[in-house]
Length: 302
Ligand code: CP
Ligand code: NVA
Image (tube, rainbow, N blue to C red; front, top):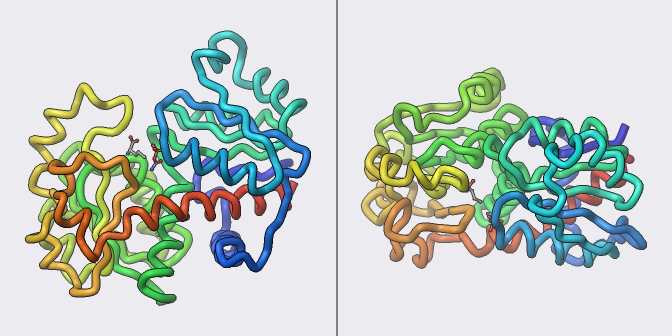
């Protein structure tokens, strides 16, 4: 059975550390693996993308392979033919599939029937490559520690769920400032709470969320596919805006993170995003390195 990354919990804690180690070695230029030499990778997109598309295409090329950009309007996954048949066909042509789409179950079905690794490039439920890259960025900036206090402010979405997934594997002190029906997935939250090495707090008080935080993290209030909810989410979440006043309540050396794209002036202000504590573009860069490490790790297991 090939290994896939449908969500972070498809890996064990020691495999997550192995991926970080590979990422560090690749970024430092200590190793230059070419596991995709002579192979192609299908990159399927049902939603728009800048970072995921470009960082995967560049990463695939640096690993010796060729990226094929495939839009869902072309293949119509699950409509023109079953997801299982599409998985079987793609497995005859390419060495790996990367997919960004709406339903997590579609990614899992693709992985179940493919005989090659499948990597989730974002669904409504999770965004695993983003959070693996972001944790790597935190270690780069704050140095190796047993646990970081991460304050996530805003909508409890795919990015929040992936933070919770990581917390269920490795020690994370996660404080989520959000409210009502913007809370993250309850099952994923419960699973994270079962890791005795992690701590998970959900609060509707933004100041409680950021107290003593090492990292302030935010994301758009209305994710892709939810733009019709934008005004409603803005009303509910405006108290959680990452601005200089909220940043002042965190640890003095705290870093500010956003997976991007950002809606400046809504979930984050310009002065904070462009300020000295912001590491948002390092995060964007590390998507490239972490995805190369993820693909190399999965292909090694196949
Ligand atoms: N952060 C991220 O996944 O960006 P894109 O939506 O541009 O790929
Ligand atoms: N939560 C955002 C992340 C974008 C990278 C979305 O799903 O639109």
